[in-house]
Amino acid sequence: MTKPTLLPFERILTVPESNLIKRSILTAMEVFERWGYNYIKLPAFDHYEVHVKALGSKSSGTIVFKDTQEGELIGLRSDFTTQVVRSVSFFKVWHFPLRLYYFGTLFSSENNTWERFQVGLELIGVKNVEGDAEVISATAEYIKTLGIKGVVATIGHVNIVRKLLENLKDELRDEVREAFRERNLSLLREIFDNGLISRLPLIQGKEEALRVLSELGLEEERVELEELGRHLEEAGIDFIYDLSEVRDFPYYTGVVFEFFHPNIGSPIAGGGRYDTLSQAYGESFPATGGSVYIDKLLPLLKPKPEEKDFFVIDLSHKKKFGFKVASLLRSKGYKVGRDIVRRALEHSLDYAFSEGYKKVVVVTDEKDVKVYTTVKDYYLVSLEEFLKLV
Image (cartoon, rainbow, N blue to C red; front, side, top):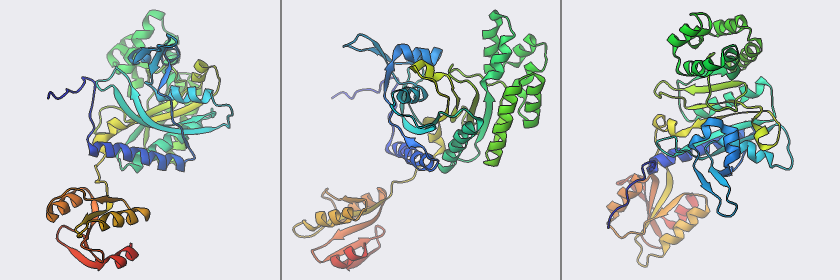
Protein backbone atom coordinates (compact mmCIF):
# COMPACT_ATOMS: atom_id res chain seq x y z
CA MET A 1 0.00 0.00 0.00
CA THR A 2 1.46 3.35 -1.07
CA LYS A 3 1.54 6.02 1.63
CA PRO A 4 0.18 9.41 0.46
CA THR A 5 2.73 12.23 0.44
CA LEU A 6 2.31 15.54 2.23
CA LEU A 7 0.75 18.31 0.18
CA PRO A 8 3.32 20.99 -0.78
CA PHE A 9 1.63 23.60 1.43
CA GLU A 10 0.80 21.25 4.31
CA ARG A 11 2.29 20.94 7.77
CA ILE A 12 1.59 18.10 10.17
CA LEU A 13 1.82 19.06 13.84
CA THR A 14 3.18 16.60 16.38
CA VAL A 15 1.33 15.90 19.63
CA PRO A 16 3.74 18.16 21.63
CA GLU A 17 3.25 20.96 19.05
CA SER A 18 -0.51 20.46 19.19
CA ASN A 19 -0.37 20.73 22.97
CA LEU A 20 1.45 24.06 22.58
CA ILE A 21 -1.43 25.25 20.39
CA LYS A 22 -3.84 24.12 23.09
CA ARG A 23 -1.82 25.99 25.71
CA SER A 24 -1.99 29.13 23.57
CA ILE A 25 -5.79 28.82 23.47
CA LEU A 26 -6.19 28.19 27.19
CA THR A 27 -3.86 31.12 27.96
CA ALA A 28 -5.87 33.36 25.65
CA MET A 29 -9.06 32.42 27.47
CA GLU A 30 -7.40 33.07 30.83
CA VAL A 31 -5.75 36.40 30.00
CA PHE A 32 -8.25 38.04 27.67
CA GLU A 33 -11.25 37.14 29.83
CA ARG A 34 -9.37 38.64 32.77
CA TRP A 35 -9.40 41.88 30.75
CA GLY A 36 -13.17 41.60 30.22
CA TYR A 37 -13.11 40.22 26.66
CA ASN A 38 -15.69 37.72 25.35
CA TYR A 39 -14.93 34.84 23.01
CA ILE A 40 -16.37 35.00 19.50
CA LYS A 41 -16.43 32.09 17.04
CA LEU A 42 -15.78 33.58 13.62
CA PRO A 43 -17.04 32.42 10.21
CA ALA A 44 -14.58 30.80 7.83
CA PHE A 45 -15.98 32.42 4.67
CA ASP A 46 -16.64 35.84 3.21
CA HIS A 47 -17.86 37.29 -0.06
CA TYR A 48 -14.67 37.47 -2.11
CA GLU A 49 -15.66 40.83 -3.59
CA VAL A 50 -16.02 42.34 -0.10
CA HIS A 51 -12.82 40.62 1.02
CA VAL A 52 -10.93 42.39 -1.78
CA LYS A 53 -12.50 45.72 -0.82
CA ALA A 54 -11.46 45.26 2.81
CA LEU A 55 -7.96 43.84 2.29
CA GLY A 56 -6.81 45.44 -0.97
CA SER A 57 -3.64 43.83 -2.33
CA LYS A 58 -3.44 41.56 0.74
CA SER A 59 -6.41 39.64 -0.67
CA SER A 60 -4.18 38.18 -3.42
CA GLY A 61 -3.47 35.08 -1.35
CA THR A 62 -7.11 34.37 -0.58
CA ILE A 63 -8.19 30.84 -1.42
CA VAL A 64 -11.27 31.29 -3.61
CA PHE A 65 -14.01 28.93 -4.80
CA LYS A 66 -17.37 29.34 -6.48
CA ASP A 67 -20.64 28.88 -4.65
CA THR A 68 -22.36 26.19 -6.73
CA GLN A 69 -25.83 27.45 -5.79
CA GLU A 70 -25.43 31.18 -6.35
CA GLY A 71 -22.39 31.22 -8.64
CA GLU A 72 -20.73 33.81 -6.38
CA LEU A 73 -17.03 33.77 -5.55
CA ILE A 74 -16.40 32.91 -1.90
CA GLY A 75 -13.13 33.54 -0.05
CA LEU A 76 -11.76 31.34 2.73
CA ARG A 77 -10.78 33.61 5.62
CA SER A 78 -7.26 34.99 5.41
CA ASP A 79 -7.65 37.71 8.05
CA PHE A 80 -9.40 37.66 11.43
CA THR A 81 -9.95 41.40 11.85
CA THR A 82 -12.23 41.60 8.82
CA GLN A 83 -14.23 38.63 10.09
CA VAL A 84 -14.69 40.23 13.51
CA VAL A 85 -15.98 43.44 11.90
CA ARG A 86 -18.17 41.46 9.51
CA SER A 87 -19.68 39.48 12.39
CA VAL A 88 -20.34 42.60 14.47
CA SER A 89 -22.07 44.21 11.50
CA PHE A 90 -24.71 41.46 11.74
CA PHE A 91 -25.29 41.86 15.49
CA LYS A 92 -28.81 43.09 16.20
CA VAL A 93 -27.83 44.89 19.39
CA TRP A 94 -24.54 46.65 20.13
CA HIS A 95 -23.33 47.63 23.55
CA PHE A 96 -20.15 49.60 22.88
CA PRO A 97 -17.45 49.04 23.64
CA LEU A 98 -17.41 45.44 22.45
CA ARG A 99 -14.45 43.46 23.77
CA LEU A 100 -13.96 40.31 21.71
CA TYR A 101 -11.24 37.68 21.45
CA TYR A 102 -10.78 34.75 19.08
CA PHE A 103 -8.50 31.90 18.14
CA GLY A 104 -8.31 29.74 15.06
CA THR A 105 -6.76 29.07 11.66
CA LEU A 106 -6.22 31.45 8.77
CA PHE A 107 -5.84 30.23 5.19
CA SER A 108 -3.70 31.92 2.55
CA SER A 109 -1.74 30.69 -0.46
CA GLU A 110 0.82 33.48 0.05
CA ASN A 111 2.66 31.41 2.66
CA ASN A 112 4.63 28.18 2.34
CA THR A 113 2.14 26.68 4.75
CA TRP A 114 -1.39 27.62 3.81
CA GLU A 115 -2.60 27.37 7.40
CA ARG A 116 -1.61 29.79 10.17
CA PHE A 117 -2.85 29.77 13.74
CA GLN A 118 -3.56 32.99 15.60
CA VAL A 119 -5.17 34.29 18.75
CA GLY A 120 -6.19 37.89 19.10
CA LEU A 121 -8.50 40.51 20.53
CA GLU A 122 -10.51 43.40 19.15
CA LEU A 123 -11.87 46.46 20.94
CA ILE A 124 -14.86 47.73 18.96
CA GLY A 125 -16.49 51.14 19.40
CA VAL A 126 -13.63 53.00 21.10
CA LYS A 127 -11.79 55.79 19.27
CA ASN A 128 -9.35 57.06 21.91
CA VAL A 129 -5.68 56.20 22.42
CA GLU A 130 -6.48 54.55 25.74
CA GLY A 131 -8.20 51.84 23.72
CA ASP A 132 -5.01 51.22 21.73
CA ALA A 133 -3.06 51.07 24.98
CA GLU A 134 -5.46 48.47 26.38
CA VAL A 135 -5.07 46.19 23.37
CA ILE A 136 -1.27 46.49 23.40
CA SER A 137 -1.10 45.92 27.17
CA ALA A 138 -3.38 42.85 27.04
CA THR A 139 -1.31 41.43 24.18
CA ALA A 140 1.90 41.99 26.16
CA GLU A 141 0.39 40.25 29.20
CA TYR A 142 -0.65 37.30 27.03
CA ILE A 143 2.88 36.87 25.67
CA LYS A 144 4.35 37.18 29.17
CA THR A 145 1.87 34.65 30.59
CA LEU A 146 3.04 32.15 27.97
CA GLY A 147 6.47 32.42 29.59
CA ILE A 148 8.15 34.40 26.79
CA LYS A 149 10.64 37.04 27.95
CA GLY A 150 12.78 39.68 26.25
CA VAL A 151 10.00 40.98 23.99
CA VAL A 152 10.04 44.59 22.75
CA ALA A 153 7.11 46.47 21.21
CA THR A 154 7.48 48.91 18.33
CA ILE A 155 4.87 51.66 18.23
CA GLY A 156 4.11 53.62 15.09
CA HIS A 157 1.41 55.53 13.23
CA VAL A 158 0.46 54.78 9.61
CA ASN A 159 -0.41 58.42 8.91
CA ILE A 160 3.21 59.54 9.31
CA VAL A 161 4.38 58.01 6.03
CA ARG A 162 1.00 58.54 4.36
CA LYS A 163 1.13 62.30 4.96
CA LEU A 164 4.75 62.53 3.84
CA LEU A 165 3.85 60.74 0.59
CA GLU A 166 1.11 63.30 -0.14
CA ASN A 167 3.80 65.91 -0.80
CA LEU A 168 5.47 63.80 -3.50
CA LYS A 169 4.74 63.48 -7.19
CA ASP A 170 2.44 60.60 -8.07
CA GLU A 171 5.15 58.64 -9.87
CA LEU A 172 7.38 58.68 -6.76
CA ARG A 173 4.89 57.62 -4.12
CA ASP A 174 4.99 53.85 -4.62
CA GLU A 175 8.78 53.89 -4.83
CA VAL A 176 9.19 55.90 -1.62
CA ARG A 177 6.59 53.84 0.21
CA GLU A 178 8.57 50.72 -0.68
CA ALA A 179 11.78 52.43 0.44
CA PHE A 180 10.27 53.08 3.86
CA ARG A 181 9.04 49.50 4.06
CA GLU A 182 12.45 48.06 3.18
CA ARG A 183 14.38 50.66 5.22
CA ASN A 184 16.23 51.62 2.04
CA LEU A 185 18.20 54.51 3.50
CA SER A 186 20.23 55.26 0.37
CA LEU A 187 17.11 55.78 -1.73
CA LEU A 188 15.47 57.88 0.98
CA ARG A 189 18.58 60.07 1.22
CA GLU A 190 18.56 60.51 -2.53
CA ILE A 191 14.90 61.53 -2.68
CA PHE A 192 14.85 63.72 0.44
CA ASP A 193 18.32 65.28 -0.02
CA ASN A 194 19.69 63.54 3.07
CA GLY A 195 17.25 65.56 5.16
CA LEU A 196 15.30 64.77 8.31
CA ILE A 197 12.72 62.55 6.55
CA SER A 198 15.44 60.25 5.21
CA ARG A 199 16.52 59.52 8.80
CA LEU A 200 13.09 58.43 10.07
CA PRO A 201 13.88 54.68 9.96
CA LEU A 202 16.86 55.31 12.26
CA ILE A 203 15.04 57.32 14.93
CA GLN A 204 13.99 55.22 17.92
CA GLY A 205 14.74 57.38 20.96
CA LYS A 206 11.46 58.40 22.53
CA GLU A 207 12.19 62.08 23.08
CA GLU A 208 13.88 62.46 19.71
CA ALA A 209 11.00 60.72 17.90
CA LEU A 210 8.41 63.07 19.40
CA ARG A 211 10.56 66.12 18.67
CA VAL A 212 11.03 65.07 15.03
CA LEU A 213 7.27 64.69 14.56
CA SER A 214 6.79 68.25 15.78
CA GLU A 215 9.51 69.50 13.38
CA LEU A 216 7.72 67.74 10.49
CA GLY A 217 4.39 69.33 11.42
CA LEU A 218 2.84 65.97 12.34
CA GLU A 219 1.36 67.26 15.56
CA GLU A 220 -1.71 65.01 15.65
CA GLU A 221 0.45 61.89 15.35
CA ARG A 222 2.90 63.22 17.94
CA VAL A 223 0.14 63.82 20.48
CA GLU A 224 -1.29 60.32 20.00
CA LEU A 225 2.08 58.58 20.24
CA GLU A 226 3.12 60.61 23.27
CA GLU A 227 -0.13 59.75 25.11
CA LEU A 228 0.18 56.09 24.11
CA GLY A 229 3.76 56.05 25.36
CA ARG A 230 2.66 57.31 28.78
CA HIS A 231 0.09 54.53 29.07
CA LEU A 232 2.61 51.86 28.07
CA GLU A 233 5.24 53.15 30.47
CA GLU A 234 2.70 52.98 33.28
CA ALA A 235 1.97 49.39 32.25
CA GLY A 236 5.68 48.53 32.34
CA ILE A 237 5.89 47.62 28.64
CA ASP A 238 9.28 47.87 26.93
CA PHE A 239 8.76 49.78 23.67
CA ILE A 240 10.36 51.98 21.05
CA TYR A 241 8.83 54.29 18.45
CA ASP A 242 8.93 53.46 14.74
CA LEU A 243 8.30 56.57 12.65
CA SER A 244 8.60 54.85 9.27
CA GLU A 245 5.96 52.18 9.76
CA VAL A 246 4.28 50.97 6.57
CA ARG A 247 1.57 48.33 6.63
CA ASP A 248 0.37 46.10 3.81
CA PHE A 249 -3.17 45.98 5.14
CA PRO A 250 -4.99 49.08 3.82
CA TYR A 251 -7.51 49.23 6.66
CA TYR A 252 -5.15 50.64 9.31
CA THR A 253 -5.93 54.28 10.09
CA GLY A 254 -3.81 55.28 13.08
CA VAL A 255 -1.65 53.75 15.81
CA VAL A 256 -0.01 50.44 14.86
CA PHE A 257 2.23 48.13 16.85
CA GLU A 258 4.34 44.99 16.63
CA PHE A 259 6.10 42.77 19.16
CA PHE A 260 9.56 41.38 18.45
CA HIS A 261 11.67 38.70 20.12
CA PRO A 262 15.47 38.67 19.59
CA ASN A 263 15.43 35.00 18.51
CA ILE A 264 12.75 35.45 15.84
CA GLY A 265 13.46 37.40 12.68
CA SER A 266 9.95 38.74 12.17
CA PRO A 267 7.13 40.07 14.38
CA ILE A 268 5.46 37.60 16.73
CA ALA A 269 2.39 39.82 17.20
CA GLY A 270 0.95 43.00 15.77
CA GLY A 271 -2.11 45.11 15.15
CA GLY A 272 -3.44 48.62 15.28
CA ARG A 273 -6.36 50.97 14.76
CA TYR A 274 -8.84 50.53 11.88
CA ASP A 275 -11.62 53.08 12.22
CA THR A 276 -12.98 52.82 8.65
CA LEU A 277 -12.90 49.06 7.98
CA SER A 278 -16.55 48.70 9.07
CA GLN A 279 -17.59 50.74 6.02
CA ALA A 280 -16.79 47.74 3.82
CA TYR A 281 -19.57 45.93 5.69
CA GLY A 282 -22.12 48.73 5.58
CA GLU A 283 -21.49 50.11 9.08
CA SER A 284 -19.47 52.86 10.75
CA PHE A 285 -17.69 52.31 14.05
CA PRO A 286 -14.11 52.80 15.27
CA ALA A 287 -12.01 49.84 16.38
CA THR A 288 -8.55 48.66 17.33
CA GLY A 289 -7.09 45.20 17.84
CA GLY A 290 -4.14 42.86 17.69
CA SER A 291 -3.14 39.31 16.83
CA VAL A 292 -0.47 36.95 18.13
CA TYR A 293 1.11 34.71 15.49
CA ILE A 294 1.25 31.39 17.31
CA ASP A 295 3.20 29.64 14.53
CA LYS A 296 6.03 32.13 15.13
CA LEU A 297 5.86 31.51 18.89
CA LEU A 298 6.17 27.71 18.79
CA PRO A 299 10.02 27.76 18.80
CA LEU A 300 9.92 29.98 21.91
CA LEU A 301 7.53 27.80 23.90
CA LYS A 302 8.90 24.97 26.00
CA PRO A 303 6.90 21.76 25.60
CA LYS A 304 5.35 20.52 28.80
CA PRO A 305 4.16 16.93 29.18
CA GLU A 306 0.40 16.75 29.47
CA GLU A 307 -0.03 15.67 33.06
CA LYS A 308 -2.75 13.15 33.80
CA ASP A 309 -3.77 11.86 37.21
CA PHE A 310 -4.24 8.08 37.25
CA PHE A 311 -3.56 5.13 34.95
CA VAL A 312 -5.53 2.04 35.97
CA ILE A 313 -4.21 -1.48 35.35
CA ASP A 314 -6.57 -4.35 36.15
CA LEU A 315 -4.88 -7.58 37.28
CA SER A 316 -7.91 -8.92 39.12
CA HIS A 317 -9.21 -12.38 38.28
CA LYS A 318 -12.31 -11.36 36.35
CA LYS A 319 -10.96 -7.97 35.25
CA LYS A 320 -14.13 -6.10 36.11
CA PHE A 321 -12.94 -3.83 38.90
CA GLY A 322 -10.51 -1.71 36.87
CA PHE A 323 -13.30 -0.20 34.78
CA LYS A 324 -15.29 0.65 37.92
CA VAL A 325 -12.27 2.22 39.61
CA ALA A 326 -11.50 4.34 36.52
CA SER A 327 -15.13 5.46 36.27
CA LEU A 328 -15.25 6.44 39.95
CA LEU A 329 -12.04 8.46 39.63
CA ARG A 330 -13.34 10.26 36.53
CA SER A 331 -16.57 11.10 38.37
CA LYS A 332 -14.39 12.90 40.93
CA GLY A 333 -12.87 15.05 38.18
CA TYR A 334 -9.57 13.24 37.67
CA LYS A 335 -7.92 12.58 34.30
CA VAL A 336 -7.83 8.80 34.09
CA GLY A 337 -6.59 6.33 31.52
CA ARG A 338 -7.05 2.57 31.61
CA ASP A 339 -4.77 -0.13 30.27
CA ILE A 340 -6.63 -2.12 27.64
CA VAL A 341 -3.55 -3.78 26.13
CA ARG A 342 -2.34 -7.15 27.35
CA ARG A 343 1.35 -6.89 28.25
CA ALA A 344 3.76 -7.35 31.13
CA LEU A 345 3.19 -5.07 34.12
CA GLU A 346 6.59 -3.39 33.77
CA HIS A 347 5.77 -2.41 30.19
CA SER A 348 2.43 -0.93 31.25
CA LEU A 349 4.19 1.05 33.99
CA ASP A 350 6.78 2.38 31.54
CA TYR A 351 4.00 3.42 29.18
CA ALA A 352 1.96 5.15 31.89
CA PHE A 353 4.75 7.30 33.31
CA SER A 354 6.10 8.17 29.86
CA GLU A 355 2.60 9.45 28.98
CA GLY A 356 2.57 11.83 31.93
CA TYR A 357 0.41 9.96 34.44
CA LYS A 358 1.23 10.96 38.00
CA LYS A 359 0.22 7.63 39.56
CA VAL A 360 -0.57 4.12 38.40
CA VAL A 361 -3.30 2.17 40.19
CA VAL A 362 -2.92 -1.60 39.87
CA VAL A 363 -6.11 -3.39 40.87
CA THR A 364 -5.09 -6.80 42.23
CA ASP A 365 -8.52 -7.93 43.45
CA GLU A 366 -11.79 -6.50 44.71
CA LYS A 367 -10.19 -5.47 47.99
CA ASP A 368 -6.65 -4.19 47.38
CA VAL A 369 -4.76 -1.91 45.00
CA LYS A 370 -1.11 -1.08 44.47
CA VAL A 371 -0.47 2.61 43.87
CA TYR A 372 2.77 3.24 41.95
CA THR A 373 4.39 6.64 42.22
CA THR A 374 7.35 5.57 40.00
CA VAL A 375 8.00 2.47 37.95
CA LYS A 376 9.52 0.86 41.05
CA ASP A 377 7.95 2.54 44.08
CA TYR A 378 4.45 1.68 45.24
CA TYR A 379 2.33 1.30 48.35
CA LEU A 380 -0.40 -1.24 49.05
CA VAL A 381 -3.77 -0.01 50.25
CA SER A 382 -7.30 -1.33 50.36
CA LEU A 383 -9.55 -0.29 47.51
CA GLU A 384 -12.03 1.27 49.91
CA GLU A 385 -9.34 3.33 51.64
CA PHE A 386 -7.83 4.44 48.33
CA LEU A 387 -11.17 5.74 47.08
CA LYS A 388 -11.64 7.65 50.34
CA LEU A 389 -8.20 9.22 49.99
CA VAL A 390 -8.90 10.55 46.51
